[in-house]
Image (cartoon, rainbow, N blue to C red; front, side, top):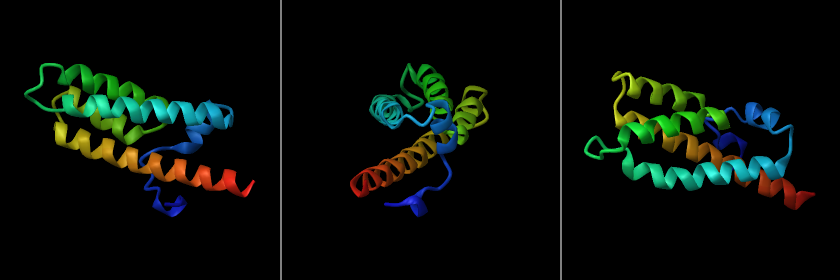
Length: 112
């Protein structure tokens, strides 16, 4: 994975600015987002009683890391204008971007 693998689902410039370029903070925030995503995903099902809470939580977390498209899809799902499948697709795109970004940062740290 490399920068070319990043689709634009996450605005890393926003995240880097918000964290004032602190790589440790960025790494921690992204790790928390990824960890939480694994907890939210099973709830993103119309049959799950907590799906609305999950969508709302994902929306806030997405906006916090710069995953604006995911945040917008979550807002539309809360408003009844987007499906949970659309939320899951946007979440997957954000997670793929995060994986590519984390990989790129790891390679940079190896180069010094």
